[in-house]
Image (cartoon, rainbow, N blue to C red; front, side, top):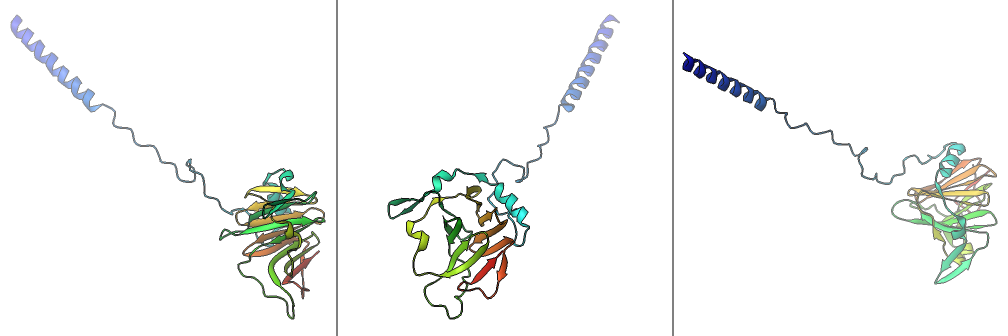
Length: 228
């Protein structure tokens, strides 16, 4: 009897051991489910540069000014010089710079004189010269004084660009000079004249006025003229 009881007890223990082992094996945690992969918008990769948020044609001048002022300010001290053929020209209080004018990788060169800004670039769709115009037509010659904006000019000389070109104003940077401030962007250049609350976008795909600038017709000796 005692031997039978021992045998029965041993069988019971073995059965319990198999049962516990089975439960342990079946209750092992499954491999954790993978976490959700971040979308490109929330991932660590830097977004590609874009012109999103730039003021559209016809935007209120207050919005344009706010966007220009949101750029990263740079010290104007590095923009009082122009370079040409290895010669550096000091410009005094005036400034010179180059900035992107939009695809395809073209640039705008600008220089100030007496508070006005003159820029030169290649327009994608250059306007024809005015009727009966005589002389060398430069369709991408832009002059912005705050009270007026002209596109295109009859020029037989380099004018202020005889001094050369200035330092690069990189996309996202803003430069203040006199009563003006310009912000560079990959899609073009935006400038404001605070005294007259007038602004302009200068880009290869076109020139857009903001604020008090209204079109003058017919424009004298230019493709387009806007005035306050």
